[in-house]
Length: 272
Length: 198
View 1 (cartoon, rainbow over the protein chains, first blue to last red):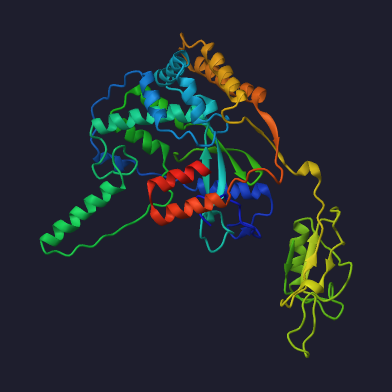
View 2: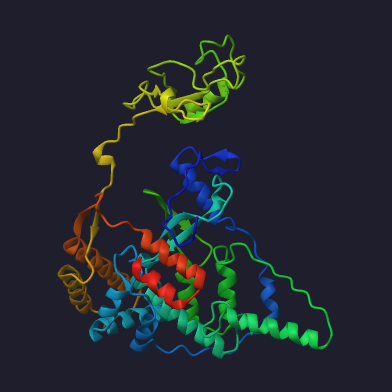
C-alpha cells in the first residue's frame, strides 16, 4: 500500500477497540473518535510556560488584498475541491475580481476585530484512510484521518497563519531550533545544522551520538488552553487572542469511512 | 459472514456425532449480528482430508441475514477447488440498483458550465454588504450568504454523471509509471509529470 495511490480500505473482519469488535457503525465512529481525541480532558501543566518571558505587544494591522493574492499564488490548480466544491483555481478567478476580494478581506478583518470565527468554518470532514504497510488493519491506529475543510475557509486560514508566523518570527518568539513548518526553512536546513554539529565535534576529536524521538499525534492532541496561553506570551493583542479562542471553540467533524458518514462529533483538542 | 471456522459440529456436519465447545460462541456472535447459519443447496464436505484415513469435513460456513435473497442458496463447487483442500462456496448476493451509487455531480473543467458557475459566485459575492460589519451576527450573516452562494451555484451548474465501464479510472497504468519514475529519480520534473496525469 502506498500513500499516493487510491485508498481502498482493506477487507477486514472488524476493527477492535478496547478488545471489543466494532460490529456496527456507531461503535466504529465512537472507536475512531475516542482515538483521535484521546487527550480530551487530559490535565496539562500550564506552569511549563512560566519559564517563557512575556513578549511585547504585537501590532496587528488589518489584512490587505495582497496578502490573499500571495497566499493563494502557490496553491495547486490541480488540487481537488473541498466540501464546498470550490477549487483553488476557482478561488484564484474569484479574488482576481477586486470587489470580491475586498468583501472577503472585510469579512476576515471583522473576524479579527470582533474575535469571532463563523460556525460554517468550524465544521470539517475527516476521511479515514489506511496507513501503508501495516501488518494488520483491525485496530483504529492502522488508519488516519485526512481533514477536509471548505476552500474559502482554508484561504482565510492561510492568510491568518502567514500573518501569525510573520509576527512570531519578527518578535523572535519562535525557538531558533524550530525548523518544521516555518517559511523559508526546510528539512535541508535541519540536515545542514546537524552536519555542522557533527563536523564541529569531529574537529574537536569528540564522539557524537544522536537521539531522535517522535511525539505521537502532536498536532491532533494539542491542548487549546495551552496554545492560547502560548499566544498570549507571544504578545498577541486581546482581539486576536479572543479570535483564536473562538476559532478553537465549538468545532465539529464528521467521519467518512468508504461511503458511510457519521453524525457530527465535537472536537475540543488538536489543530490542523 | 463466511469463513473456514475450523469447528466440527453435528449442527452442520452429519458425519459428526457431537457438539463443539466453540459452537455456542459462534452462534452467539452470529446472532448478535442478526445472522443465521445458511444451508447449502448441495450438501457435502467443504474440506477434504489430507490422506485416505482422514475424514472429510464441513468447516467452511456461511452466516447470512435470513431476509437476504441469497439465504440458503449457496452451493459447493468441487470442480474449481484446484490444489486447495477446501471446496469453493458459490454465493449470489442480490444488490438492489438503488443501493449502487453510480452517479455523481460534476462540472467539467474549462467548460461553459464552469465559467457560469464562477460568474454566479462572483455576482453574488459582489452583492454581499460588508461595509458595516460590527458583530458576530453580521459575520454569521455574511458567511451564511457565502455558503449558500457556493451551494446554489453548484446545484444550478453541476450535472449528473454516470460511472460506466468506459469511465476514466482514478488511477491508471500511466499514473503507476509516472509515480515509479518519480520514486526512481526523485526528480522534481518527474513529480510534475505525475501531477499532470492524475
